[in-house]
Length: 129
Ligand SMILES: [Cu+2]
Image (tube, rainbow, N blue to C red; front, side, top):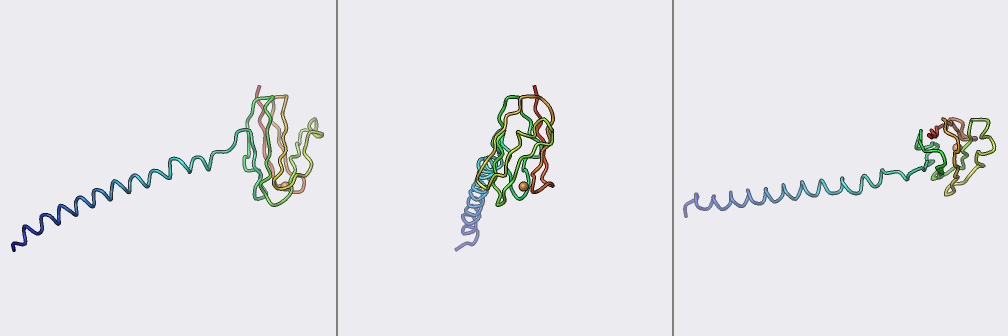
């Protein structure tokens, strides 16, 4: 048998298999990135998560009258303690992992806050008109 005639179908087969493999790869590598990743990263609106001894959102901006919720997803208890003296009574008590604290700012301004037992935990709320 002539070797040339045997080679042609093998080459054709390799080209087809390679082509199919490339199409499959490009599809499967694109799919997980578009959907699931962006959903996992997207934060809930007007929410500050507390994790690993940190306010995950360092600066949150809301319109006045919008409720902000702090969610404790850490293993320790934390507070949201406003540094503006006029908001002293609005600050939270210690709240436990799994609990949350909600506050609605009624006046535009920039409000810094920290956590009472962990003063290095600091973040800012920007309230706009
Ligand atoms: Cu804390």
